[in-house]
Image (cartoon, rainbow, N blue to C red):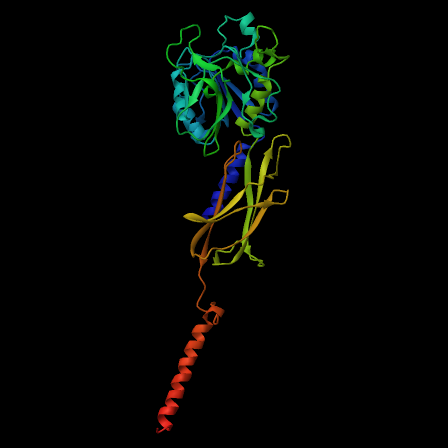
Length: 436
């Protein structure tokens, strides 16, 4: 019963994440953001998001009311706000994420303390204040002609290779101007979505670099995603400009003295930002499971409470993926979904085969060990929501009347026993009736 409740809860969470009109709070510290980042915000509305805009000075704004969350997603475009509203404090944002909801947090070189605290809770450590990502090799030509020559408008094509997170990926390099960050040690949930090139580093522009940079090379993280164990998705961007209309429509060309760098009429920022936001707000890579069934091979009784050791068991389950374009659940057809038959440790681990319609099945032999077991699927794959399903059954030994009475390997013992009987009978006859 508990397994069915757990499965129902998982399906309810998955369905709630795939709502048709998710509510999204956009919190900003500069009213101009609504104009300077209009393309990105309009793309959210076009995908059905109901946007609520609020300034950080608005004390009335809050993420929850009477214990009920008012939004499914949070867009935080207020990097320098030292004081967030009480209803959107860093504790409230962490609780928002802990509840399984999503957040997009973009900053610039002046990262406020509350946002640093949120980042630290998620395993992200932003570089020191006033530092910027610098690249003297892979910087945009505009930084050499119109900029101050600090080479802080860097060009990067070091994106994660995942169609779930970024679709086909941007067709042009991405422009970035902002601060770098690093993942704290031991954090396994982070995804390096966009990193600096081998020549990038983090430092104060124009200042002499005395010590080794806080981050350098491809270890300089520009955009990082995190999917928590409760399937909450959070994206941290060290550049608010990355989502701006200016960078969306700007041409991009890596500077070279000879002018031989490949020129693109439009940067890959718009493709990158929109594709990533679709994953960020659970419009892609969302899985659910249903119709978990198991039975004795050849039997019509579905989901029995117990099996016997060495029984042949048929197991099946249906797994589906949310399609934003179709606004429907479609069959999931990967070949790496595994089933475990577990009692503390897995006794059986086997790969499920699908029929192309999302139905996964396998047949296996119950182990020669009795006790309480679980059918368990714990599917974790880059970009996809964590899928965990389990159901408990008992495995009992043979009953006293189910053992074979005569087995081949025991015939020598049978013969020896009967030979003793025969010998004793012969001895009795001889002893009783033969006087000599």
